[in-house]
Image (cartoon, one colour):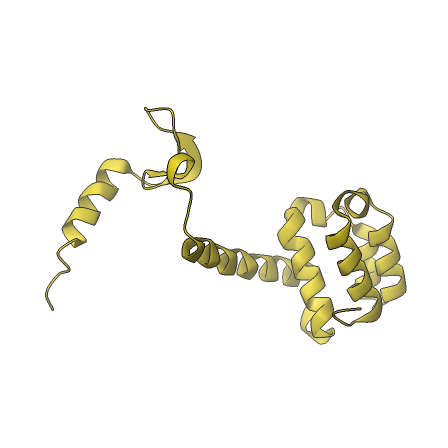
Length: 143
């Protein structure tokens, strides 16, 4: 099988740039990530953003499942609400919702939604948190 004419070029540039997981300032002072991708001037494409979204959703699903092993027993809208919450705030912040998590594990959706509503997150994120609150409470999308 013939090599793509750019395989060697990609290998060379990747070796020269080195991989950086987190954004950094390159010698020219530009925010850069990965293998020298200048995000300051070039941003990212919607295709790349969609790929990252899928990857990050997969991570959020695993994180919620690790905390709430019965996740897949719940109504799909509730699964979505919990995954959206994890995606938005991340594991450390999600774990601070101890009473909500306990209520979810007990399938006490009234209490779980009330715990979410009684939070700084709810007050700060308005429409997103209100939608998650309603879904947790009712088990339905578009309520």
